[in-house]
Length: 336
Ligand code: P6P
View 1: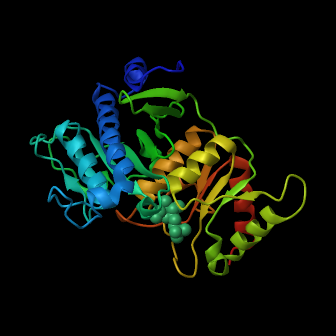
View 2 (view 1 turned 120 degrees about the vertical axis):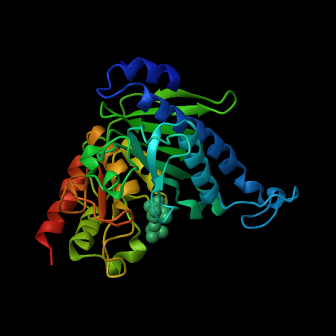
View 3 (view 1 turned 90 degrees about the vertical axis):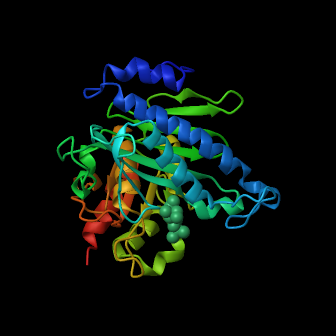
């Protein structure tokens, strides 16, 4: 049972036995993500010092090349996962193809693959708005002892063994699940330790916040337009409040605590929406369902979708169960 103020390290050890697969590898994997999160957090927090440390793509006063933060985050997560010799493959939004990890795992004995969006919402960095890292973990399905293959990454979201995010906000939090509920850990930057601050996080069944980029309104399907107008009507506990940060992790995190729905629908501009199935929607869907919420493409459960490409996009409706189901009703009623 999660105890408030427990450290992430203590929590991992205490819950390791309850995880049906673990031989300690998954614990080591979560620990490596913990380390990378602290390293990236340090750099993200410096981003405001551009005049001192130099903007991305330039050299700073030490003559060092200043990496774009999403490239930096990508390198750090890949380096940490590789050096800890835990995974056999990595896929990332920042990498065209998946990475076969054989530097330490030359015999391909490791069992897990990780998919990451290393710095989601990175365009917000320049305006000091919170951003996040999203990760998704599967057991490989091709034979141990052989190089990892694309099919190890193209698994349904329902096959995930772990998923989570780091939100670099007013405080830095690591929120994750291994299939036994969702727990949130807040970083104490003074000592570099994550503490259990949000045990057993759950979406309220209902909410009053809807998150969508209404600038795309005229391009949305009719069902989405009708749902947005439903949210704005004066009736019962409506109108709702519109809150859209432009950072999936932050909008999801707020909605999980307060109740709400996040939508990135398809549109006449983006026929499959904008978000990526494998390293954005599936991990957030796993978290949502573990937190008693729901995640769909407007019609079907996200985690039932069979992926066909590493970077494929999918429309995304995620959050409080009753709100997602209401949006699905409009989508069904007005499906073209
Ligand atoms: P738009 C960030 O680029 C992101 O992937 C999500 O974090 C965010 O919710 C969405 O895209 C914002 O996209 O088109 O509304 O600016």
